[in-house]
Structures are given as C-alpha cells and as structure tokens.
Amino acid sequence: MTETTKTPSVLFVCSKNGGKSQLAAGLMNQLANGTVTVHSAGTKPAESLNPQSVDSLAELGIDITGEHPKPISDEVMDAADVVIVLGNEAKVEPREGQRLEFWDTDEPSERGIEGMERMSLVRDDIKARVRKLYAELTGN
Image (cartoon, rainbow, N blue to C red; front, side, top):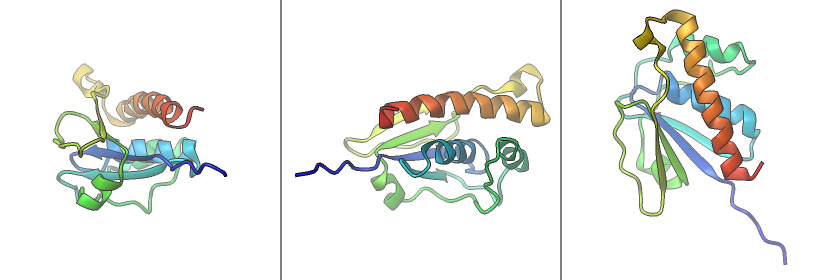
C-alpha cells in the first residue's frame, strides 16, 4: 500500500496583491516547480501589478506578466495549508488548523532607498524567506 502525500498549499497575501505577495508567489513557483501549490491574493487588490516587482522577478528569469491582482476568497483561504501575510497593511483571520505567518519584510524606502534598488532588496528578503518556507513544507 503506497501512501500518497498531499501537495502543500501556500497563500501569499498582501494588501494590493500587486507587489510583495506576487513576488513571493513567483519565487515559490520557480523554486517548488510544482511541488507546492501556490496562490496569491490581496485584501484590497490594486488595478495592476507593480511594474518594478515584475521587472525584479524578470531579472531572475521569472515571468509574472500574465498575473493580475486578485481578491482573497474563501475558496483560496480554505485550500491553503499555510497563509503568509506580507507587510503590515493586510489583515487576515486564519481558518481552523491553518498555519498563519506574518512576514515583516524589509522596507528599504524607510532608509531612503527607492526604485529598482529598493525592489531588488525587497525581492531578496522575500526570496530568503520563501526558501526557508519551501524547505519546511517539503523537507528539501
């Protein structure tokens, strides 16, 4: 008898779903290569993705140009084993038995760093956290 293991599912949430949660989802999708189900959503979705987020992922060979900001839904919340809230603007209540983490990500703009330099630092901070989460979820 073979034991089937459930594919872990993670939901990345930020307020607008145009920047940080999209960065995290893109990074996890590349790293996991199908071994983790990945969703992203926003509590107050923006009209479009943050172009600097798109560009910062493109630097790593990750294309998220087909993505768009999405509202958080009960269906996506219920499907997630782990919910990661990025930044401090989004407010999310976990479901029973669900792991909820708050990632207080680096904010270089507080140090006067803007533009693509800022976005690269944000991306790299999130990338390190995604790697750690991936290792926890998969044992890799």
